[in-house]
Image (cartoon, one colour):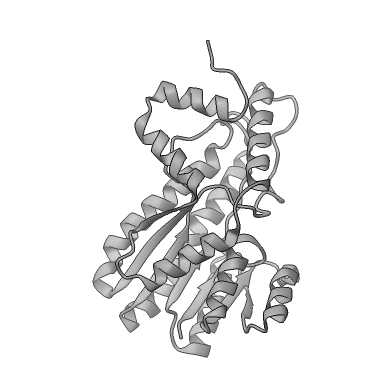
Length: 277
């Protein structure tokens, strides 16, 4: 039985991953910033008669990250798996996206993962084992699309972090993986800030938002991402970068085989705009 600590578990990938580990009989600590938003997790636990421990954890707060980690170690004596899932997204052109929103993205998506990694590593090093799984995105493997720069950049950073971290912790028996999903049906955009009206990039921003919302609405089952996380944890030979979803494979393949001009034209086509003349 593994001791698993997961961030961002009120919905989406975090919720699905918590349930996937709990179904195996692992000891799951499902965390979220607001425990008042645990209704979906509570309902699934009750329906399937699963046991999951809930903890409040704000990955943007040093004390919160430390306190949650200390609580798990005090109760279990170890942490075998950390899943860094908590993430946010806001949209806007480089000229227009407010600095505070861009910083929120990086504070959660990148530095939130760093906080959790730093919090669990002393325990994992002492026990000589552990798996750290970062939930990245296919957006971190392809050139950025217009008006989505901050989110894409944060996921590129998370992928690079995963590579660097792997080389650092491998001598201690710790593995690192970066899961890179395509579009899956989550409510990740519920709190995303839309671009303000009156922007000189209004047509581009509107097209991008519409594309992203539609793609997520028609996306795959988050349980597939949860299954990929479990598989990575179970397989010592798993690659570090794990692409999940046929659309992710298509996007990453296209990015690797097209010129910059071709990618730019493809990006405009994806969001319903004609190529630039």
